[in-house]
Amino acid sequence: MKALVLNCGSSSIKYQLLDMENESVVTKGLVERIGLNGSRLKYQVGDAQYVVEQDIAGHSAGIALVLDILCKGPHKVIKSLNEIDVVGHRVTHGGELFKETVKVDAEVIEGIKKCISIAPLHNPANLAGIETCMKLIPKTPQIAVFDTAFHQQMPQKAFMYGLPYDLYKKYGIRRYGFHGTSHRYVTERTAELMGKKAEDLKLVICHLGNGASVTAVKNGHSVDTSMGFTPLDGLIMGTRCGEIDPALVGFIMEHEDMTVKQVMRYLNGQSGVLGLSGISSDFRDVEDEAIKGDERAEMAIDAFAYQVEKFIGSYVMIMDGIDALVFTAGVGENSPYVRNKVCANLSHWGTKLDKERNEHGDKPRKISTDDSKVAIYIVPTNEELMIARECKRLLGK
Ligand code: ADP
Image (cartoon, rainbow, N blue to C red; front, side, top):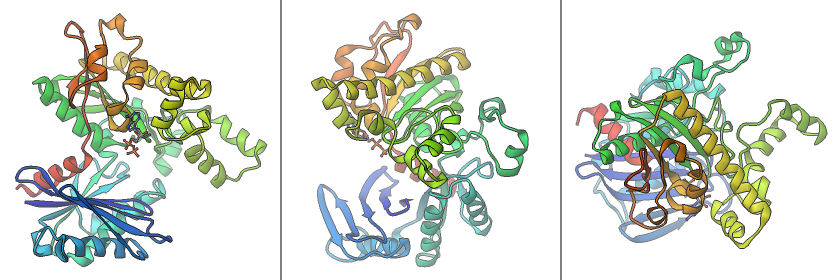
């Protein structure tokens, strides 16, 4: 069974074709700068990388190009589009309408459209991907996998904000949480590594990338998570401010003479580690400068790591314990420096990071000491594989 996984952003399309007989990646690629100058498709077959530079006006043209490259020309990996058994779409926001993965039909499309009001930046692109595939390969089933679905079993006390209840009823204002597909994949993989069932575990998963979130997973379900109504909430991130005093939004608008749009762009794109360090949103660059002695760079990483610590602490409390602390995504998987800072104060629960294991070894791996009461793991995330597995499960193959 072959599954094409699509992740359509506002100006990009990431894709992978997976062979689900052995869960291998047949090919993967990225369409960049859709609708802009210099649009191109970069793709990989085996170890070889290729680039096609051409005008790509919209998502429709981008997906048409991807489908062409898959089955035509010198680097084709399938003989015809009929070999694609299913397309799995990453959909950012499913609101309260979608609590699990669904097969796309007219009703699902209407539902995703309804969620545009709460995810205006993401859902339109996801929808464009779905509608294009329905036109270009109408006989192939389309499956929607929502970033918010894994968090839909959060108890109400965890998802309500202290705002008038009417706003929840009128606009669906509440905490939704994101990175759900990643948190779910990492939950299942960690349980497998521990030789236990996810239903029997209490985990805190730190998905630390450009976007970052921490999730409390109890008995296989998310019971709380740091991102909120939008992905802006929670941790300090690459360019996002994370949680701030809400009164600051008005203060900044007034004092920096900004409109709503400008202040949202500022909080999403100019803040976080970039804004604090003044160096970069890329953690590697900031970390390099911190190690060389740049004080602002070190302060930015310290502030980031401190927040991760605070979320971990509060999630251990609300779950009444923890079996494993797990790091994933770009920073979580690759930065011993950040993990070391985050794990500086775990000894009161008898938890010890092993210095050598933190710094060296294959992934996934355990990085706590053998006598640590709580295990610490690095578990690489794989959202595409999770989406493809969901497609397989839903089609009953
Ligand atoms: P996203 O998917 O949110 O864009 P990723 O999960 O790909 O983010 O993570 C990207 C981040 O991971 C970048 O800030 C990058 O600097 C960081 N990163 C990757 N490798 C390392 C490393 N070895 N040390 C520190 N940070 C790293």
